[in-house]
Length: 189
Image (cartoon, rainbow, N blue to C red; front, side):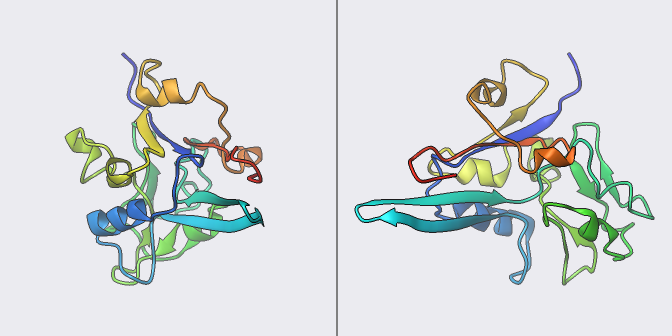
């Protein structure tokens, strides 16, 4: 079987904006208070009462196959592993912020404690390597997140992606491995 290639699906129709994913991410990865690896942005309410809708959008690294953040790194601290996850080696990072500036998703930040670039890693070191799902996926009460192997057509992720999905800023050619099921609850984009 081919090497695993991890991806994620965010279903904006299921998301309730509870921020459980963001809280779980912060706890799992010891993210300092003034920054975040993952956030759910809430837009709304929109419409007129009683027909109001809310839009929810995941904001995090989208794990690009053609990641603009990787080739600009002068030390090799930004890299993509064999399983397609974009990572940062904090020991090699010199804090130049080239990768932060190169990310069209604004998903990277300078960690105020370490000074190194930081971002979502799908909890690679702490969970995926142990065969567990990322913290955000495991905690979501609405099952709005699906994680899995893009190379396995029988994976829960591949099966869920058979529905209409979109890729954030796909026109940039970054080839994100985060897919989104757009809001279809009326009034959503």
